[in-house]
Image (cartoon, rainbow, N blue to C red; front, top):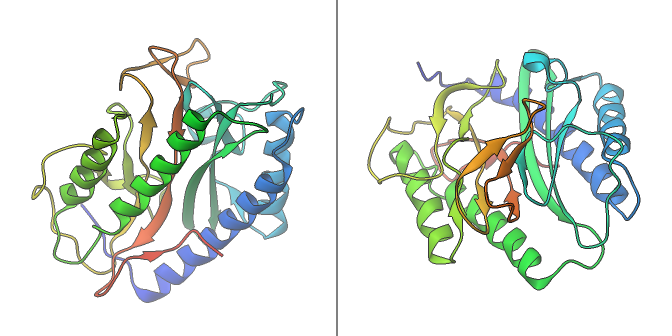
Amino acid sequence: MIVCKSDQEIGYMKDAGRIVALAHKEIEKAVELGVTTLELDKIAEDVILANQAKPAFKGYQGFPASICASINEQVVHGIPGLRKLENGDIISIDIGAEINGYYGDSAVTLPVGDVSSEGLELIRITEEALYQGINQALSGNRLSDISHCIQSFIEEKGYSVVRDYVGHGIGRQMHEEPQIPNFGRPGRGPRLRPGMTLAIEPMVNQGTHEVVTLGDSWTVVTRDKKRSAHFEHSIAVTDKKPEILTKI
């Protein structure tokens, strides 16, 4: 069942989203050569706790950290650790926070040092795909209009969209109905209505869409070891244009 949120509930989600955005801002300042992903995790956790919120990911189904930090061929769910960022890496940072019983969830992919033109283009196209999808989150559209828009845009650029992991509803739970694939035919699924809150998150690979999970049971990588990028915002459907909740 898809629940439409009240204005008050969306206000609480804006609070959570603002904290997520603040954590991303501090992470972006800290991403540089030699920093470890564990250090980035501490920065985000400190921001979240300083704002009287809780890290949404920590302990979620056993996940051990406050952020997901996924480097190069890692698609999602990378566990922060002692790995140091190297020149030319790209790193996807996914952050969630909960306050007053409501959640915010957002991801970005950042370049480290001198990144190849191919890597920068992957980042640029993935971010643009996110906003293309958000622009389809209009009252009266069908859910799969978002999915189809993202897939069409990405594949026209010569990339592939991950099929095994998708976006989702968000609100009182980090993951609510509906699932939001980044692929599919248009005009399908529930009709969007004001008050629906969604986490839209294209995951885009340079090569095949196929992925595998590493032995830590969390880190997802591209099967062909080519790079992947990930962008996400939590948004609310309104009677006008979509409202992005995970921004300052």
